[in-house]
Length: 412
Image (cartoon, one colour):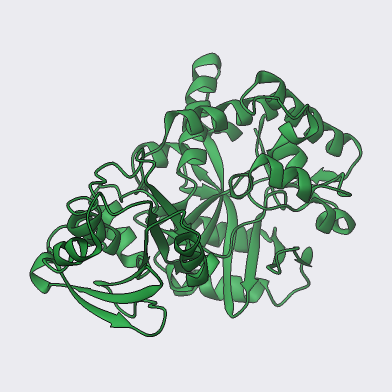
C-alpha cells in the first residue's frame, strides 16, 4: 500500500466554511471553547469539544461526550453544512500567519507505515490522551483532527503544488486569531497519481505534531481489522488524516520554561551553581536567544544571558544536545531539583507565541521565581532524533501557525 493516498474529504460547503472552522481541540480548554462558540452554532468545536453542549459539571471523558460529538457531526451532515466529495482527492492547504506562509498537502497516511516507523515519531504519548482520541475517532467513525507531518522538501512536489495554487481555491478565509486558511482541491488524475508516486518513493515522513492522534488511529485500525474477517488493508480505517508540509517552510517557535522556586537556594548560591555550567551576564533587555546553547533567564526583575560551556554540549547524542536537554541536564535538574518535568508541578511551559512578556508576567506576579527563554528547536534536530528512534523531552517544539479543525475530515 502507498505511503499516502487521496481521500473523499468531508468538508464544509463553501458558504459555511467560515462558520465551521475552529482551532484544534487541544489548544483550548472547555471554558475557552464555551466562550468561543457563543453565537456560532456551526463551529466545529461542537464536534471536537462536545462537552460544551452538556452540563458544566460533565466529565469531558464521559461516554455521553463522545456520543454528543457524533450526534453533532451527523447533524451538520444531515443539514448539508458538511458534504463529502464524490471522488478521492488531495487538497493543497496554505496557512499564513503574519510573515509566515506554508503550503502543505492534505492526505491520508498509511497506518502500517506508522507502525513500522516509516512515519517517524519523536515523542512519548500519554495513555489517557491516547484513549481519549481512540474513543473520539471510534464514536464519530471519522478522523477530524489532522496529524501535522513533514518531509524533506522535494522540487517535484513544490512544482505540482505551485501549479495547483494558481487556480481558484475552495476556501479562502481568515480565522478569528488572524491566521489565513486557503484550500484547493486536487482531483486531476495525473496530479493525484504523481503526488502519490513521489511520496511513496520517499524514505519516510516525520510527525511534527499529533502523536496522540496518530497513535489512536493505529489502535482504531487494529481494532477494526480484528473485527473485520473480510479485511483487505484497503479500508479507510487503515489510513489517518494528515497535512504534510515541506521542512523548508516549517516554523518552530521557542517553548519556554517557568519554575516556582529556587529549590531552597539563596539567589547568590543559585547563581554560583548556574555558573558551573553557564557563562552569566546581566542584560538590560529581555533575552531572546540568538543561537543554540544560549538561554535567557529572568528573575527578580532582571534578565540574564546564559551561554553554556562548550564542553557541556555532547556532539554524538541527538537528544542530549537539544537546547531543552542542555537546560534540563545542566540547570533544571541538578540545580533546581526537577528531574521529571512531565509530572513535577513546580515547572510549567510557555509557548513562544505568548512572547517574553508572558515570562516576565509569570515571575513578576510572584507565581514563579524564575523563567527561561530558549532558542527554538530546529527541525533538523527533530528529524535526527526521530531517525535515531529516540524521543525528545516534553514540550520541546511549538509549531505555528496551527491547523484548523473542520476544513477536511476523513470518514472511516
